[in-house]
Image 1 (spheres, rainbow, N blue to C red):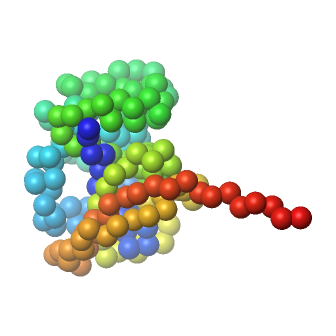
Image 2 (spheres, rainbow, N blue to C red):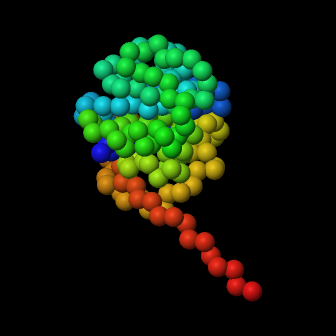
Length: 185
């Protein structure tokens, strides 16, 4: 069974992008070595939302997931133009079932915050690796939308101080349902 992992970068105040969706404020920290090659070598499948998929060409780096199975969760029509990548329109629960059936490597939930929050709410994310950049954006697209809930236990696997003040936090995730309190009258 595949391990479903999140690896995402955010500002110190919890934003993954500027209000317009630009990641330019985090760009100066892209070159910080954080073990990406070791990470990506373990990944067989990348999963992303449509906004992330559409953002990648603007980064000027080409398709960074060559050779990986790619799934783009979307409610829109269309087809991916990338080799080994397809649009997934059957919804998040069916996607999680599909991912759990994979056994050829880890799954990376690339982003963004809404998809990551949805995976957490579905109890699907097994591990979260968060790169925190030493920059305060003050506003923008939140790492997790305010509606994100469902995560009850996080086990800290490690903390690593990297170059330029970047910190890598590595959490294992566990899920417990929220207990409903009995109403006493």
